Length: 238
Image (cartoon, rainbow, N blue to C red):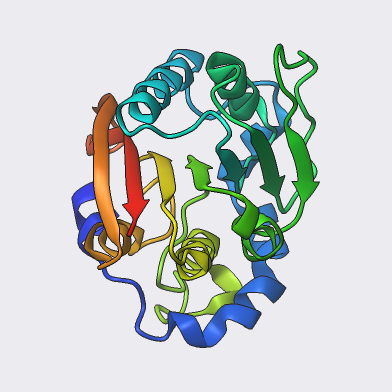
């Protein structure tokens, strides 16, 4: 499915009925996804220069919106943590705490952080927000694994073959936010190759979310000639 078609797709009507089913099957879904095999290599999914650009955008957005340097960052689906380390080193003292989580224990970077430490935890996205969401002010996702609505064999909704961890994490993080300002940052395509199908419309159309940044990071073509657009999205929860 191409980028434009994927971004036009809504979330499945029945997605909320299957939260427990999703949690049960996520380890198998993630292990079968060939996109995750790259996390065994000592590199980030996106090029280092793109991650540095994301750091510049975060720094300028923090300053423009008067976001304090004590902000707590919760990263889900962090993979091997290479992108996390590059970004944290780039931001240096522009944040208070950084908790990075992933359902798998991938090899972590050997290069130490210069100014602050990332706290890594092995857990799925829902558990991460449940445990750390209330103490964090920014939920971060960098190129989370793609997930589609249809079972490719039976062409129907099947929790055993789908992800939607990004959706449940964002939903819980938004619901936790009461009488305070928090943020959601998504780095990647937000459709097709990054994130669950329907997440673009969910984030763009959510009544409590205000898009405060959308910056193009990279434009290219996929193997079939379709567009690839990696972007920086930042939403404020109202």
